[in-house]
Length: 83
Image 1 (cartoon, rainbow, N blue to C red):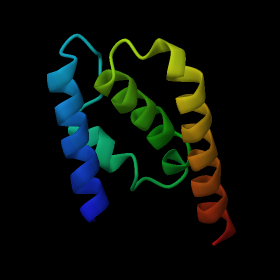
Image 2 (cartoon, rainbow, N blue to C red):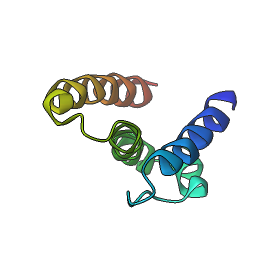
Image 3 (cartoon, one colour):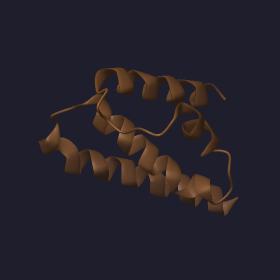
């Protein structure tokens, strides 16, 4: 639960850093974690959106960051599916 509060707040901060970024609503950022099957893929995209909006101009590190998020998403999905 605490993670969802933090995630929503981090998206709000990213929106303040990059007001031009098109981010999904904070409500969707929380609800996406709670819907079965949706929670296997959508949070990855939400996290990438947040990360990119939080670091405007970090184009060179984008590939490395995407790799880390993809590894995290794979670990998350494999843990959820194995239950």
